[in-house]
Image (cartoon, rainbow, N blue to C red; front, top):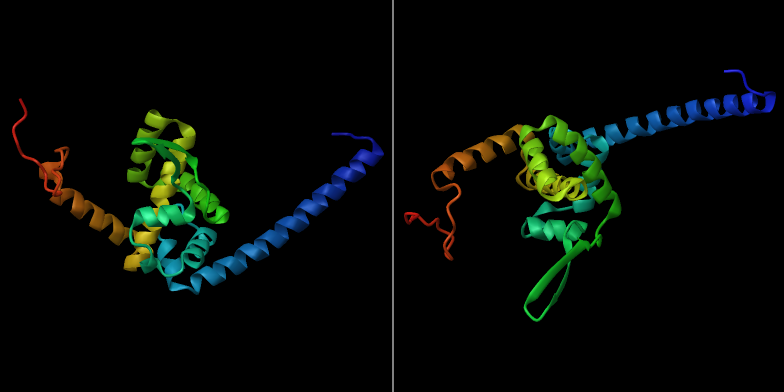
Amino acid sequence: MPLAPHTAYRRSELQALYQKFEAEIEKLNQRVEEQACGRAGARLLMTHPGVGPVTALATEVFLGDPARFADSKALASYVGIIPREYSSGGRQRLGGLTKQGNPLLRFLWGEAGAHAVRRDPELQRFYRRKLIQKGFGKASVAVARKLGIRLWIMLRDQIEYHEFCRRGQKQQKSSEACAGMPETPNGAKSHRPID
């Protein structure tokens, strides 16, 4: 497209700058990938669909020892992917995310969750269900949280994605007989007939 001389010069300078930045970014991506491949935990995490070297490396570094989290709620609280609570007088009100944890890790889990939804059928079903129930924003955060918990479990148990899926299928088969039944206070499933 023909432009005025000063505008054409500006365009060519910006295109040259863009190419320079692309080359620098590519170098940085290669360095991150080398670092991620050199760490056993990051290699495990990269087996999960949608999780690349940056997300895997950041998750391993920021979480540190995965055994320090008692459960998935403690992990979600640490990262800041839990709702704020405004409670008084027996009435519980939940607000937006606390965002008390690491913003970079939250961002990376959100981005990786968007990619993982396209590649993991179980995560895709979960996302579609939440999308219908809660809308786009809350569904995206729910997927990010679920992905983060998956990555934490993979780090904690030192397992790859395929082993994680195998364990999940095994657990589903063992609980199929009682699926959908309400739980009793002691955790057992209730098997009383329904009227």
